[in-house]
Image (cartoon, rainbow, N blue to C red; front, top):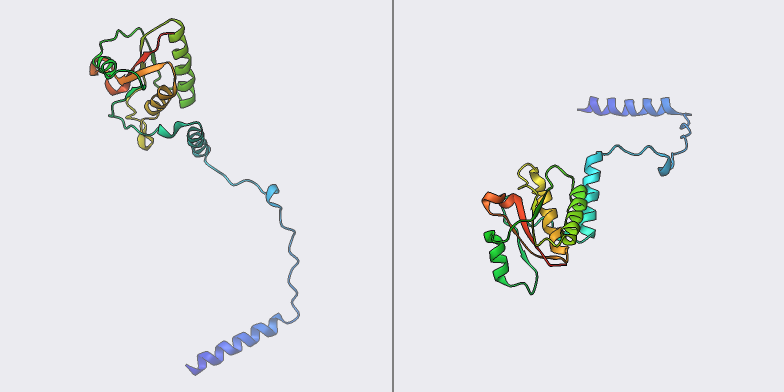
Length: 181
């Protein structure tokens, strides 16, 4: 044990003796933060985070309420319960429809807004929006279905909406009852 301690002291003394007179190298100037190369980021992850932030800022907090098999149901205040029941049963004749499958959220939002404006212009009463069930959306849940849910709730001409009956698309389509223009 004593030989090891003597050896460590000798090594320390030898190192100090060898380093006598050594001057540290001058450091190159540091690169300011704005001149550094930005670190690599996943392009789609950043875009997805930005989309989630945008949705939360634009009142889309209710976007992620439904799951793939959930039924959509909504009626505006003042609309009788009987109207919603008749809509759910498929009593109203569907006068037009739009299929949003395969679109991005921004594309679907733009097309659905345009479709609703056109439906009002042509004085349509009941329309079908096909958004899919969201079974292939993975962990994000039914993205288009939730987008349609939020947009229809915020759209003033929409009196009520409900998921279609199984023969009309089931929970992958929504029947929308519009106010008369």
